[in-house]
Length: 124
Image (tube, rainbow, N blue to C red; front, side, top):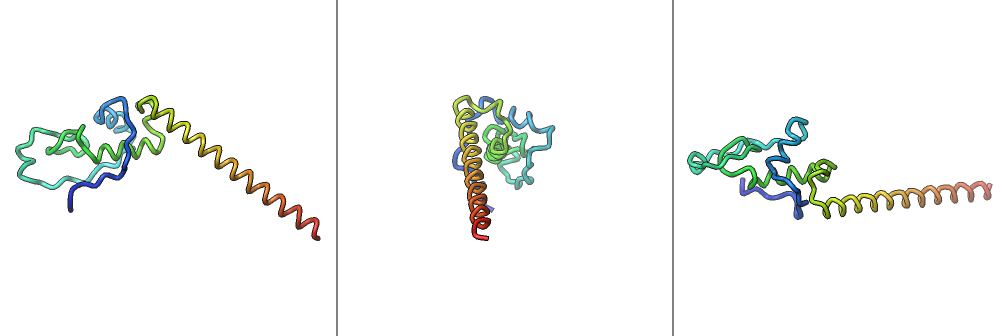
């Protein structure tokens, strides 16, 4: 098993620490907790601790898996209150545009179905 591969190419800026973000959703059971990390000699002497892994080796703020987990939750609609201002507005606008696009597509489908039904009535 090689080094951890990030799941996202872009990360939403947040206005708090990763530790605080983790604590905000910890009790709601939204987090997908990681598997236990491998034991290495360096871990024994490390003074860094990750609250997400509940293990030594790296600091919580440096944890790539926690960064991915927070981003996953942001994509699911959580953390709107800690997303950095412009990014949050941009994401909300994109959601609205997608929703409007789906409504237009749906209206077009309904119009097409109605036109087909009307043509069938006229043909019969």
